[in-house]
Image (cartoon, rainbow, N blue to C red; front, side, top):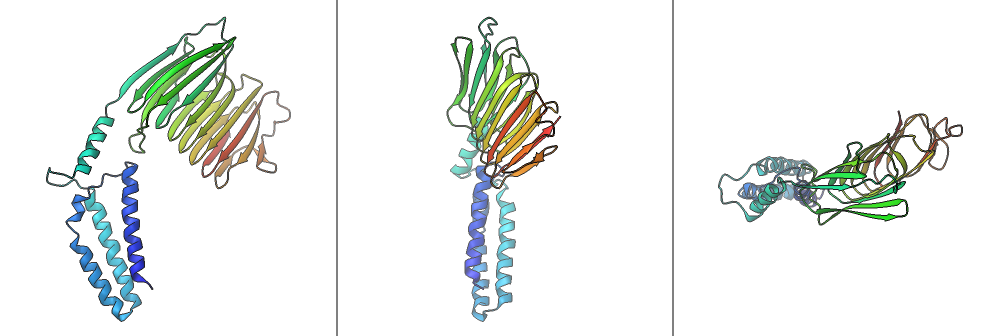
Length: 311
């Protein structure tokens, strides 16, 4: 057994794992708290040399065990802030960034609704590091309340004949973290016009209830995201296209609509309760052929969890 290689591999895994957890704000790790214990590694090296001379397999296991126990202790110790206030510049910068992120800034947007001119509205949404939630209806065409930690949001409206094209997007780098989240956006949409919604985002969350809206199409293209979306049956046809990288996707469709799912999901998990599997990644509800209202769902994901349920 090549103990040296195994031990170096464990050390590299430890350092890489700590750095990754730090980057996702899962832990706060203070390297200064552990570096004063560096003589431990001399002891481990000495133990490894003694056992390696005898070429004892048991000795190799002992060396690896001592290393694992030591790294476990350092992992716990490293999450304790240094007792002395003169911390490393890296720790100070990290705390300054976190303090800045705790301060939200608000933005509010409103676009007036003109009943005689609006029949169809296309809504384009883009922005990473953001949690989007549909809070219900409004007398305006759209309202948006933003609590942001990073980036600047803008809303533009271009009217062509009887179609409004709204573009709601974020400019700048996102401040998303798994622990603290990022920007929060609360949307309200008018329920009178027919809607098409197109979303493009990186990391983030989407919680939309379209059950009371005339939604013709919903398209989502994103990376690491969590989607929880509910659709209604106020139009004869609704098209849903979801393309993700690593995501958790939950879709709810009404039982009165016939629904067909086509998947191209690689290693993704699928849970389509109440659907019949046909072939080539196609699923249908029992009432698909007979129903006068239909929902077509296309799912494309690399390593995601897709769940479609009927309500």
